[in-house]
Length: 527
Image 1 (cartoon, rainbow, N blue to C red):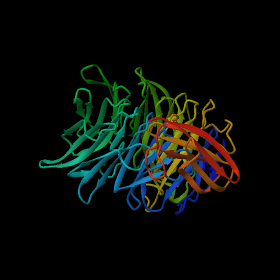
Image 2: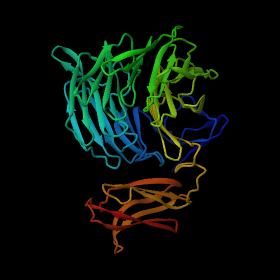
Image 3: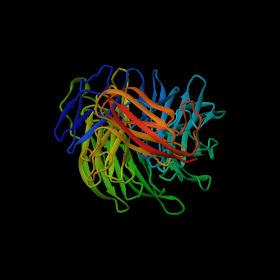
Image 4: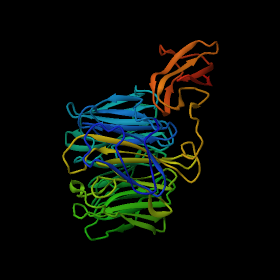
């Protein structure tokens, strides 16, 4: 069900959708200068969400969990009711997804046997395409930081990279693994002399992978199969970014550093220490290398302060700055907040910022053109990871996840959110665009080669039957049955019958039946 609530232009208070556990704050508080929708919220009572990724072409949200059961990777349709299509069990899982492609990847750390397992999926199937086991491992993250995720998938879906802390005879060291999508044999296995991997970042096309690990920052060149550059980190946390073609490299903590590739090395372009106890919270660079974003916070100070700044590159002209405004104190929620993740959409026109939680909304979305956020969401907990992508129609989609309680507070549980913010032009998900009250909305891709997704809409709750028939009218596959809820739904079909046997090339008919209503559409299966 494409549900929940419309966030009006004024402040509104919503009950968490689908929440089953305690809500420390009692409400979700959300405000936005334009209408937006929480498509769904997925809540866990015990496990927490570590990371999330959004595959826009597949319209799929990928997320990983840890802490308590269920610990798994899950893949959930963006346009659904928040029910996962599939899950894959593990231990401590971090995930990412290609924003232009249909590649999902995860790394799973098992502390009991000191192994890490790197895996790749396609959105429609719970079985990994491959798994690569690494041993002996120390950890995936350093001092509990989720870093910029220890696993990264390039936006174009060509490359998967993971940086892991390894046990070695001489002590701890970091190791970088790089894979071509679809191939479980690592193309790169590189040891770099640090045991403290705190951040990993990948360029949009997968050509360069950056790693921050005290005492150095490293950039690996995949084409050359060699280290491109390394230099002292000076002071740094998990704020790390590399631009779309590897031109710019940014990191920082007490001081922010921006370096530019000159053909032989990364020259220092700018360093900045704002003073006043401010630290670099996060940083981000656009794919087109035109814009830099930096967020600042004053660490553990109370009252807390967070600001976001946008700069044009290469001139470093300040485009705008935005200071978070503390909300009224809310008892136990009134404590330290700091940025946990910052990422540009692939088009560079939108920026999402996540924070640990406290007196500010934990999710902010900005447009490049203006300093006022176009969307904020104040959740009951802490947001650890966020991803953002757009559609050709102009809509913006955000997925965010984390703990169900604020950082620094005791408690259990985790939350995953899928959010739609309408753009200036009507797109497939725009609320002003006409939709069928009932029926099959799309079968895509069509022709069907490896698999497809059937999108359908129900006008109201009732019995549901979604089936596939061959050209002679024979039933070959049940896709969905039972009780259906109102709204938009999405089901994967891999071109197989009910026994899992691949069907031959030909024309097939997809039929939808519910509450006496019928809809059907043709699908061409091409082998």
